[in-house]
Structures are given as C-alpha cells and as structure tokens.
Image 1 (cartoon, helix red, strand yellow):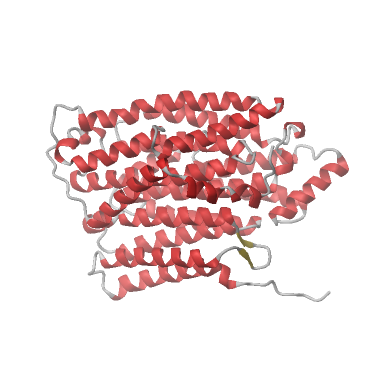
Image 2 (cartoon, rainbow, N blue to C red):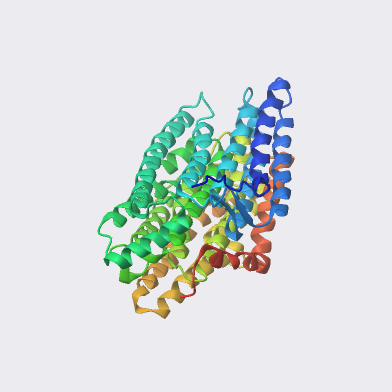
Length: 502
C-alpha cells in the first residue's frame, strides 16, 4: 500500500501560525528593548491580535492536515471570541505592567498569545489527540500567568492549585479518550461516532465502557468549565491571579472547554444522547452538573466580600446556564450556547476591566472599595452597573437575550417529546437562580450609588483600559438591542456540527 502524505493546506492555519510567530516577536522585542518600553510591548501585542483577526476574516472555511484541522462556522465564531477576550485582557493589563510587572512584560503578553493559539487550534480540531494538545497549549501558559506575581502568596497559591487541578483533569480526559479509541478504533471524531453507532447496532449494547469514558471526559472538561464538583480551584485562582488573567480565564478558557465539550459529545457521541440509549446518556449527567452549578454558584456568591471571588462564583453559575443550551441538542441549542458566550465576553471582560482599574488605583478588590464610586467616578460606576445588569440577565442588555435563548432551546425540546420533559425542570432551576443572582449584582450597584460615603479615589484609567470598557459597553448594549447579525452567524453552527432538528 502506497503511503500518502496528508494535504497540509497551511493557508487555513495562517491565523494560528501568524499568532504563534507574533508571540515570539513579542518575546524578542521585550528582550532587545531591554524592557525599558513598558507600554510598547503591550501595544505590539494588541497589534498582533488585530492583524490575526484580519487574517481570520480572509481564510474562510476548509480543511488542513488531512482531516485533523477543519475551519467551520463554529470554529470561526469561537476564534473571534478567543481573539476578542485576549484583546480585552491585554488592554486591561496596562495598569499592572506599570506597577507590578517590571522585568517580564514580554513573557506576560507572549503567554497570553500562546494560550490564544491553543484555543484557536482546539476550535478547529477534528481529532481527539490534536484536540487534547490544543487544550493543553491553552492551559499550560495559564498556569504560569496565574502565578505571575511571584512575591504574592495568593498568586503563587493560585498557580499551584491551577496546575494541580489542571494536571489531574488532563489525565482524566486522556483516560476517557483512550476508552473511546479502544471502542471505535479511531481518534477522528466523526469516524468515531459512526464506528460506535455501527458497533451498537451490531451488538445491541456497548456495556458500561461508554459510560466510564463519558464520566472521565465530563470530569476532565468539568474542570475547564468550573462545574461542581470540579470548581474548587476557581475562587482561589481568580482571587490570586492578576485581574486581567482572571478575566481571560473566565471567558477564553471557559469558551475553549465548551468547544471541546461540543466536539466530543454533540459531534462525536450524538448517537448516545437520546433517552432510549440509556445508560449511555450524557444529557442527564450534564444536566445535574448544570443544576448544581446554578444553585451553588449563585448561593455562595451572595456571601462574598471580595469582588473577584464573587465574579468567580458568578462564572460557575454562568457555566450552568450555558450548559442548559448544550444539553438541549436541537437546532437552537448550540446556537444559544454560542450567542451566550459572545454576550458573556463583553459583560464579564468589561466588569473585570473595571475591577482591574479600581485595583490599580486602590490596591483592593473588596466590594466595600466601590462605596460612593458614582460620585468620584460616575462613568466607571455607570459602566459597571451596565455590565452587572447584563450578567444578571436584565433587558434590554445582551445578557437577557442570551439567557432567553438557552431557556427557549430547552423548553422547545421538552415540549416536543415526553423523553425530554426533565428539561422543564432544568430551565425552571435556571430561572429561579437567575433571580437569586440579582441580589449580589445589585449589592455592588447599591455600594456605588446608595452609599452615604464618598469614594476618596479619583480614578483616571489609562487609554487601553478605557477602550476595553468602551468595547464591552458597546457590545452589551448593541447586541442586546440589535443582535440579528450575530444570530444569523450562529445559525450555521448546528448544521456544521451535525445537529439535526428535533
């Protein structure tokens, strides 16, 4: 048999290749400039992300490296989210590079770019091993970034905890992949689905092996998504990490985990989702984790006094809402998930940008620091209020439409078949816990606007941070009122992933 090399088609990977090389340029520039230009390396990083976005717009859809790399609507949409969250994280970092990062600015920004490259490769991966490598390239730079403040005990603790939990989850994930490979005889995701379905038809059952594989993979990805009981790392890591990195973790890393989940379960194990295939059903297990995330995240967030820990528990709850759309695998499910992550990026990155601005000025992340902020910095207070209201799901902001889409997808599927009526309960839990979330979001607004004290700080953010806040504000308001262009874009995602109408 004649051996044939795969068709590489490097043009499809041009954005990823460029961003990887640009990260090396950032490292080299910081070294050759002897680290004297504190802002230049940050602006260089922003320029690279903008150029990469332009290249992404020109590549279109297609395959590369045989069947391992595939640019489809879902990959393209999530790559936009990855680049957007990286851009906003870098823009939020100009304050800390002047005050806390003196000797390693190039490494800081370069590692953000390398993590983004991993996310982009993961989004286009159509094979288990390349997907796992993309996930590791995403996570390993974040281990270092979480512990970037070497003299801060909380930062070092954050890095160590993130590393330990990340290594354990990667082992679980790879162990689950080994079971899928053993059953299907392939690591290609689409071929795996067909081979498993044929094996099931031939034997009438696959035993408990698929269930073990699913539990292992859900546990591994549950860490990336901070779903209970795999969430323990999140509050401590968010608190100890540099604030822009905590923001990047909450959006970029979470979105990467969602892409991996969709590729494996929605695309690779679609045949084992229906109730008739029990016990090979990942829907019930994921629904339980989503329910736990919504309840636990919202309830515990109420008691927090540190705003970064509060936003960490908020992100746990938001992951639960997102997973409602994931288990509602109909023509609206993945569409709702994609739009939710898009809206969440603007609100959460914007909120964290203001947290970074306030922290740079005050040195504190306590919620009490925000007392009277509306009097001393009315613009920042107004933007923060808008971001928090969007996270709570208040109309007409983008967060409201995002929650509506995931709840509607679940209720629609539940109304079509008796097998899926449990989705009514899941959507009901989501609606009730969304009311709970109003308490802790409104508490910060109360501190800013209704406190008798006036903030002693006059905060003047740097231009990149102002740009990040403005981008977040425009996204939250604009796509809450006029979301049609984004909704049209995400409509192609279910068909490209193999989801059929139910």
